[in-house]
Image (cartoon, rainbow, N blue to C red):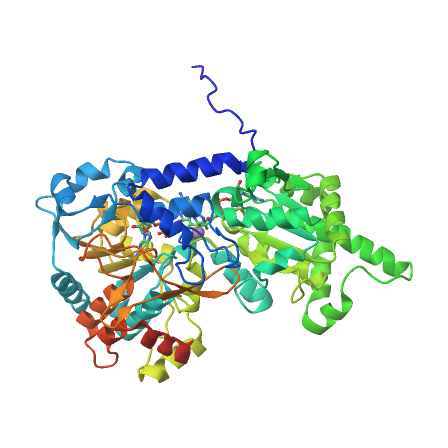
Length: 589
Ligand SMILES: Nc1nc2c(c(=O)[nH]1)N[C@H]1C(S)=C(S)[C@@H](COP(=O)(O)OP(=O)(O)OC[C@H]3O[C@@H](n4cnc5c(=O)[nH]c(N)nc54)[C@H](O)[C@@H]3O)O[C@H]1N2
Ligand SMILES: Nc1nc2c(c(=O)[nH]1)N[C@H]1C(S)=C(S)[C@@H](COP(=O)(O)OP(=O)(O)OC[C@H]3O[C@@H](n4cnc5c(=O)[nH]c(N)nc54)[C@H](O)[C@@H]3O)O[C@H]1N2
Ligand SMILES: [Mo]
């Protein structure tokens, strides 16, 4: 059969008119245009809400610090469409299951707590109190606390996720699978082993001081559009942008800044990447090894000639160990292997190494193209080694930058959403609240799903996310969820996970980041942490669509109160005043 070619290459720059037009279309289509215009004016401002789109940082200075996809994320949340009790009465779960993922989320915001009725195959309204009571009943019926999985998606606030982990640990489990397991896990693990902290080492303004920025395996045009501003700005100031990507991503080639009217009107787009390499899938580790091999050659040649070596000996001697063993490993990797595995020629790799060598200050960034391979941890560590040789850590305009995904995924980990919590953290939690936290490591996402398939799990609670669609091997994942006794989803929108209920299932509708969160002591703000480890306050301004929606923090407190009572923790008091939660965070983190 012959197909007509319908896909045309996109020759225009990323950003520019296309981006402005798409933003406008989304705002108008949200059925809440005025509200969303106002929302966008308040996004990423000193008093406003943090963009729910991604984890890139903000300077809080520019007039409009949002991007096309941030605008989409906001309007996606702040729609007037509702998935209310009538909607569920009209549509059976089987019927909804046949729809696409896009259709499901497009139907609008969840407004009322719902309980699945297997006899009618419909979700039916339930009161908040009865929902909490049902959860408590299932949890109290478990034989041991590890029959519960507490999943988290990376949008939950610091306050909600800290409270959530406290609930889990007081109940006796470290089963905290989270979206991070499918995302930047390798960055955290690799960085922790190499430098002792699982986080990046730079700040947003380091981009203004870098001489070269190496971008590995990420597509900022779609996923972190505000990063394109930083790259574009750096390129305009003479920094070399070097991209390693298996595909040619338009945003990394060329970008017209939609926030600079002149560029849009005159189509004056800036070239982003000065060099663009397309390695094999998973070939980056070999490529970086090759760069080090070339640089080591120069280093030794210089020393042999009586000159100063290329590497930063002072930094290496003072702060690292094992450099000789690493050089042995590099010497033992021959060019044939490097070329074969990386998919790049020796000349290309030497060229990349030469750009690296010519730069005084280098930032290396990476995302999913690096972290989602079997040897990802090793690749991350290879990148760290390259940077360590040149002392690129801890100086202005240089460092390591894993570009996180969900807008608060880094904050979740800081707050203790971690199936392998440190001893120090558990000790602090235990002594602050006077209890012995569980010490045994819990389940990550894959382990949790396997335990469900073995019928070891009775209760799954999901603080956001869409586990059924996010985990690989969808049929097995769906089966795993269906084997639970109770599945509980704290969600803003309808999604696939709601349609593969356990024996019993609840959907609990929650407020989003953009919405006003009023509790007994007044309006609350929450906090989030970006990719640069900066913690921001975020305060929603939109009026919630329904009085029956509750904040994530209030829902977690409601569950914990129903299950554990308030002997150790006054859950409902904490939910009434998030400042009290922050005091506890300060005491335990
Ligand atoms: N609009 C929007 N924005 C989002 C999200 C969203 O759902 N929607 N999700 C957020 C989340 S959770 C995340 S984690 C981030 C993800 O942000 P990214 O990591 O940028 O996301 P991907 O689309 O997975 O892009 C992976 C890139 O790596 C390249 N690649 C694939 N394999 C390899 C390889 O082996 N080597 C190299 N060098 N390149 C490779 C691909 O061509 C692609 O450009 O986005 C965040 N931002
Ligand atoms: N096929 C495929 N699978 C992937 C990926 C991929 O690129 N392709 N990416 C992987 C990566 S990097 C990640 S991080 C994971 C993401 O995995 P998840 O975080 O589990 O999935 P999402 O699709 O981001 O979750 C979307 C749902 O979250 C809910 N939601 C949105 N905002 C909020 C909020 O503010 N609060 C609450 N409580 N709920 C909210 C809505 O109900 C929405 O339907 O998926 C991984 N799996
Ligand atoms: Mo992610």
